[in-house]
Image 1 (cartoon, rainbow, N blue to C red):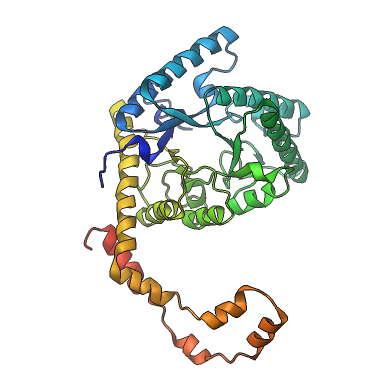
Image 2: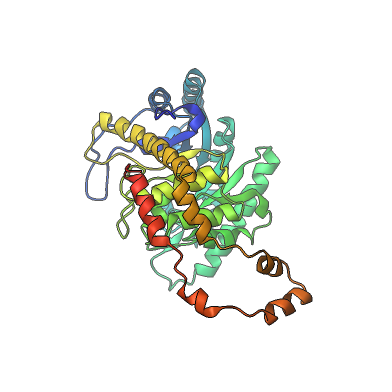
Amino acid sequence: MTLTPQPSDKFTFGLWTVGNPGRDPFGEPTRKALEPTYTVEKLAALGAYGVSLHDNDLVPLGASLGERGRIVADFKGALDNTGLSVTMATTNLFTDPVFKDGAFTSADARVRAFALQKTMQAMDLGAELGAPTYVFWGGREGAEVDAGGNTVDALAHFREALNFLCEYSQSQGYGFRFALEPKPNEPRGDLYLPTVGSALGFISTLEKPEHFGVNPEFAHDTMAGLSFPHALAQAIDAGKLFHVDLNDQKPGRFDQDLRFGAENLKGAFFTVKLLEDSGYSGPRHFDAHALRTEDEAGVWDFAEGCMKTYLILKKKARQFNEDREIQELIAAYKVRDERLEGLSKTFSRENAEQLKDTRFDLEALRSRGPGLERLDQLTVELLMGVR
């Protein structure tokens, strides 16, 4: 297995990721901004499959129709020349001060209407560029103060906006699949729909839930002390993994968006294993950025590192699945009992009565050791390259 990225690996980056200039709340940019066409050319040279973008990553807010046309034409030319695809589009509803207290969930009807207008225009752009998936990250959809009583109203407004935009997509023939991106906090004190579970629950209340899924992100779960592989598994189990954001994060810190695999190798490993074993066919999207310390050369080292680490862990996942001792331990851990499984899978009065009459050897169940210490140690040895 080669560790050189190929377009068939479906690795993608946002224009805002490699284009991050190194600004943070306490310091000015440390790198120059990168032109979108240049970014496309560099990513293609590294073996990437595609790019994603917010509307204003490409077209500045307030650009004239002529400026928009020129910018989009140049970008399309770069895509054609390199073979890269636009795999996801989204709207910047968080940078402009108009969204300081929310976009779709703002208590101000004028702001909500502007957010819809901006998003429809961004969807037009995404459709023009051929993006199949549209992501909603509610960066300002939240609160620091609940005294305004906006929480229940905000969820209702959020629902109205998503229903409206789904209908717009269908009326225009765009056929977008929509993905909600959960996050617990930052930049707001508390964001609405903070977890994959809350997003899945909210999707079930929409008028056409079949058009909506989730876009979970490694850092968003990790920063809150949650397990990203578990969140990912929940999305896969629900058939709602429409897109995925890969990066890394130290628990309890601000949203760091570190290079994939930079901190949590076991978490990254089980993330890759889940994606590969589940048959997920979508982009492996890196929503991360180079450290603020780096110059442009460091940006491309970062991008290459994200892809290479994924490929290494993909190779490790294959090795894990083929390791005889590991698989024997897993088989021993997952105890099978055909009779009890048959009684438990489907309810009937007869099955229920037989289960109630079954005598279990509780002492044996209490004393059984499932062998997880050994299994976990072998996983660590595999990742450390000694197996």
